[in-house]
Image (tube, helix red, strand yellow):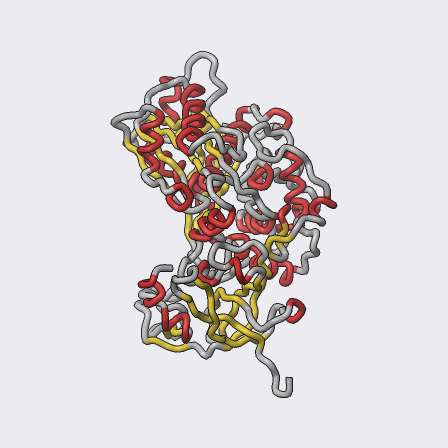
Length: 134
Length: 387
């Protein structure tokens, strides 16, 4: 991603800023110009709670350039409690813990580094929600 | 609209062609197709390709290849829709001839994936996903398919070896195809002991990185006689050509376990051709990963939701089964040179319909279907061909 693209998407990566469609009231992430549910013009910004559950997950052993230092890592589809699904890494986990339906919450983590002098990209990952007393 | 026929096909064996450039392998396929067609008239060349810019720093592929083939003053363009670029290019060629705008269109799918490192190729393939909201988080194409497969196994209670039959069938069929990358059968043990790439996907669920080029010559069916004379293997007609899209990102699908674009494009193709799934003798589906075979069979009407994998377990997909698939090895065994794959599917479908498939020949097949998938199900192109 370019510097300009990272700047444009900062509110999405740092705070899961999406939208609520003024016509059909569905939550949308990331913001769009057209609601994917009802095709009307999409509406006011809305920051997601960051809570959700694991819809699916995979432990990846072959990874692209820029992510080699973190290999292997676990990717997930996380269904946010507002409705939208996002693709993100899971963090603060051990292998055995991950299961479909597991409650997770958003945290901000380093996504990748562009070499010694390039940008360091931060964004959302998800970790298990621990019950009180854990 | 005119009906369109294929009067010549050509292909280069799929593999690691370090001694040949993208223009060489494309020329090889195009020259073979034109020689078979028996014509040197070319009004248009449409090139299906995904990664030449990302991996070779070479765009403008239509003219690059037309130039190398010696074509001047023809219409040419590169057509890109990720892994469905080949079939999208065929569809453009089909529209050009069907509309009457061109008399002879050549379509070539070509991809050169082995000129760079594996990490670069993996990153290049990931550009088919949403760069800002999928790839930016480190997911690869294997990863996206693994997310689908994990959820599918969970929802439909599929055992670990539930998808093995797709890989075993592809390799069994590819063993008879001289143009396939892997020409040997595999056992269940080989499948079960294969290294994991992204859980639960192992190497034997996954198609290989490779180079390839495949081409076809298209003319109006009513004019086949003007071109085809003497010893010719026979023209094959395009009975239907259809395409549909879905969301670019897997996470935005209404149902991530259903290929809605495959359903829509196959339904359009069934209506256009007047053919039903039961009329189709074999199906060249997009088995980039075994999970895609299951989902493709479900979306095109051969299995109910969640039951596509049963067709592999019951061997209904074998050469003598209810719906033979990957009859020349599919993406798994023939190989998956991404932008070329859709044209390999078409070339192989023509081979089957002419009765030129050798030991892999499907008996009495007069109608075949080919379906090419771009991304994780985002663009899906369906063609039905008949002899």
